[in-house]
Image (cartoon, rainbow, N blue to C red; front, side, top):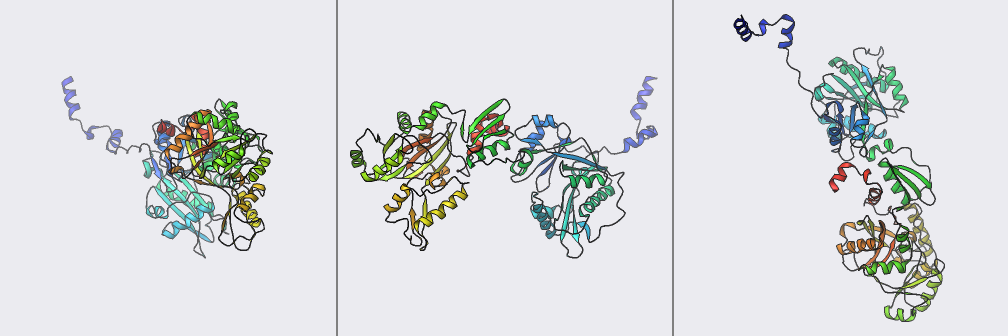
Length: 585
């Protein structure tokens, strides 16, 4: 009996199956859903969360986001889990997800008037779509991308065309999930709805949404989904009118400059100087909480996780009072860095040294207050005792103690050192004016000063003081002199930004010996953030002389170097994106 049953089982074929199982056996097995699927849409990629194995895989995939692109992770069911995998890189988009059940959708009774909806057909259509994107602050798409996708099954473009002018006045994009990644639910989604703000015809947006819904309904898709910003009341009203309903799925995006307004929060209303603003902007990009404690003084508090740091621009609680006091007294700074092997110019105290003998030895000197900042009270290139006496008197308005220093010829080089690394190097050039053959020197200075103030948020101006007048006279001019056309006149000897100087990035070309000198000086002072000023014949030359150290260097003047980024890295190393931390390590 058992042998007979075994032989029957071995010979059984499809024809021997029960009728209700025969159809299932003959039906082909559906293709599996594509794993880790990301669809290139030109403006960025759509990453479908349901195709990814876990949150880590999603985070890893987003790291290949293209430059100036916006990737979107859609259908995230557990955003709290996904964000935990890369909290410094991803954020929860403040959007709602809506769904239209295509089985219940009914087309409109009336057709639109004054325009009609059609498929994208020409390269001109593609260019017109980009113009619409730009009016709505959307990420543009290379026109060729639209053109190459015009016949694709997974992505569909519709445009609204004005019946009279032929102009494209609206557009919408649709994604067929079944064709894109074998979605077993056969869903579809709507993206990039944009209507020309100058169009006069009513109902363009509604007509585009309806056309897309009918397109996917005819294909047999089950639903049409979309993501809409939570405060876009007008769009939400339209979708709900058409029968869309909220569903519990969420959207993730990367923290990039395009998305900054979505994750950084409302802009500050306080007026902050550029040196505080550049740091605050970088902190907000990383999700670091910012509290402005004194806007006028540039004070703010940054909080991230369990750490809170009070700052005044680039000066933070990480810089000790001892380090500040060393930088504050230029004579002390000189002794400390000299002991570390950094080359310093010769120097005497104006009250204790033989100034005449010092001048005779060096031929040209610098007068500077022992305590002071932003170039105030500093006079450079003095060659007579009379000039020195005037400069000393002016410097005493800044500090009781005055230093006389050997004048080293060369260019003024600022090196910004953060966490014992040089992150930016810049040549600082003194204020200059160029003659036009009609204006006086004073008029040229006033105009140039206004330009510098506008360019630096009011931080850089050329003072019309005794030092400026001395520099003008040294070249044979007076304030009322007409400067010949094309003639360049240096009106300050110091290159400080606050006295009208300009800054020119030389980070890529600076000599390694200068970098090492700056790092040595920072280590000797034991200061985490500092601006080291050297005089050099050229940034490419190994020769230098140390001038001073600034415990609160301005980070806003060193584009394109990432000074603010490195400062925030120092304060909050865990705010550095995981991928970047791994690369650095």
